[in-house]
Length: 95
Image (tube, helix red, strand yellow):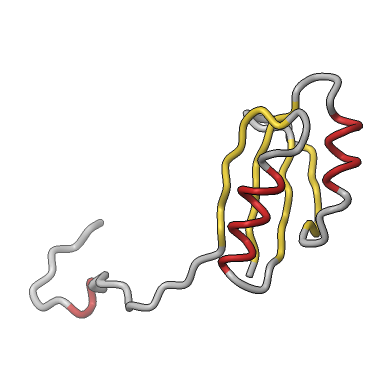
């Protein structure tokens, strides 16, 4: 399973942050961003429990990490309740 962490690092803490980030085996890629967050970190784990552990116990506690937003791959097990216009009798044209 895959997850993404958006994060900001305190000024001057980048070398220590990256040194420690490199020791986390589940980290696959790091991208620099030009937006509200400075970095995007891609993480791969074998289970939701491992993913949560890596993101909460490791990445969020690295030196210099000030702010994070975490996104974890999910699966939808139910079908969408969206009704297509062609399936509705006497539908009103939308255009």
